[in-house]
Amino acid sequence: MSQVKENDTIKVHYTGKLSNGQVFDSSLEREPLEVELGKGMLIPGFEKGIIDMKLNEKKTINIPVAEAYGDVQKELMYEVKKEQLPPDMAPEVGMGLASKDENGREVQFRVAAVNDDHIIVDANHPLAGQDLTFDLELIEIK
Image (cartoon, rainbow, N blue to C red; front, side, top):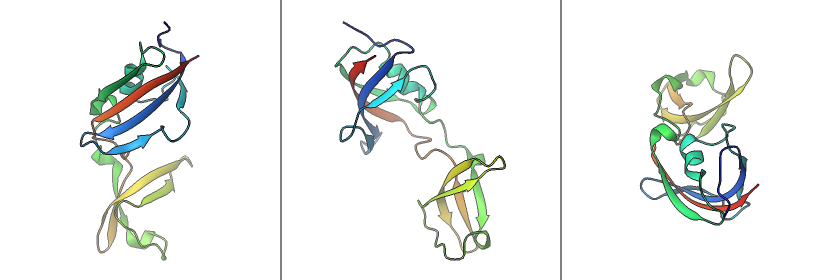
């Protein structure tokens, strides 16, 4: 029987959960994830968990913070004066924002706190600092 090895292209259905059991993403209601392994497209723990799976195998993997999105980095949190925001904007905690960095690349932020004269924005991945669990089902090995 065929087993997944490094650099294979695979299709996998997944359901991702936080440590409290809350589902944060799932492919079950859409097409399975198709990806070539070894290209840095997946978090390390997810890719490691797929290696050696057999076709149609189902399993659950637990991914610690270090093999997921890493720890929350305080240096990716910024204070922005409200006067720098568009005048019609009413920032709320959890709201997504985008900006351009000095190289013109788009950077995604989340509003982490709203104060009287400023907001705190967070550029960490929303799942940073979280241990993750994935239920996997290997659909295809190419």
